Amino acid sequence: MVQLLGININLLYRLVFALGVGLAAFAGMINAPASTVSPGMGTQVLIVSFVVVIVGGIGSVWGALLASLLIAFADTFGKVFIPDYAGISIYVVMAAILLWRPEGLFKA
Image (cartoon, rainbow, N blue to C red; front, side):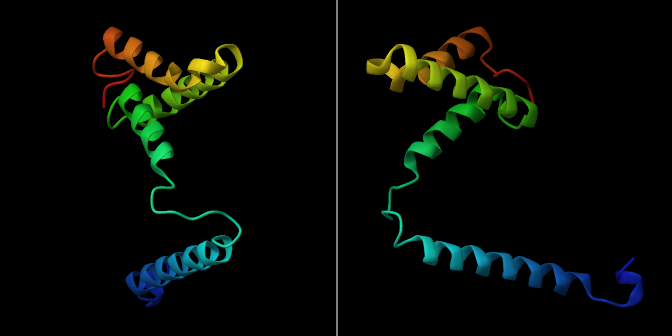
């Protein structure tokens, strides 16, 4: 509807995206002194995200949602019941699901 009024929406999309990137960069600069910033600070989150995507099925949004809940429960219960081996609980769940369904919980 706005395009019919003569407003260039491609320019508007780029402007809004650039504003969002700028605000995110500014928030990162403000938060960096308050938290420890290092080059490898997101690796643990990246590994758990990879496990969630593999368990859910690559390309399946509903599978990723279900897998994230399942992995979160496994991690939390692992930390409560077996604190010495809590780090491997998500990998045990991943191995069990991949042995049961090699394509993940849902196919894409």
